Length: 92
Image (cartoon, rainbow, N blue to C red):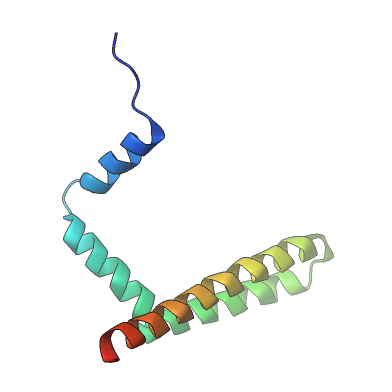
């Protein structure tokens, strides 16, 4: 009988074995590009505003709108902090 791998072992396996056909290095580069490209960040802002406008007219979605805004603001703050960290790390 073999014992099922722990959550930590599964996570390590996922880190070591990226999606078939793409290397971990290429995947990391793609993630870095998305997190720091101003055009992509602007597009996300535009999409967010479109979604909020759609929610604005429906009182049944007010709670969802508030939670959506909270998550979005956290994501935006995280992205801004990542850019600041990047600038501090590489330019100071």
